Length: 89
Image (cartoon, rainbow, N blue to C red; front, side, top):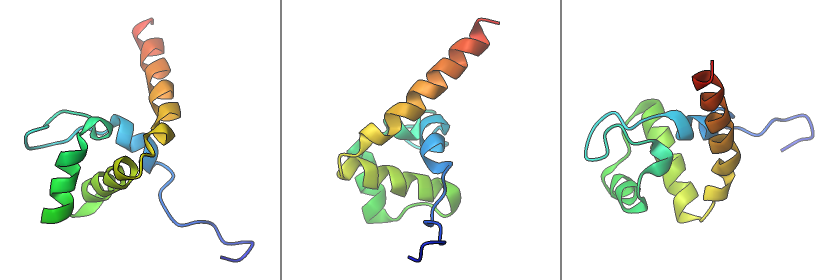
């Protein structure tokens, strides 16, 4: 990567992992960041869905299998403060 190149990836993805709910299946309505590793592993063997959902599930799988969940702590705290602020108004 040259000095002026930006790393590829979606900077919103980590935040979306903490606010996007699983739209179907056994864990419907659970936040993607809260899905158990074995469920994400099942997707990795069967194939992740197409599109953004699949990208988020695969990202969460990589995070969990590499013990990187600490990366989500700042996003979870930010979302928690944001929701508390809305409920107080």
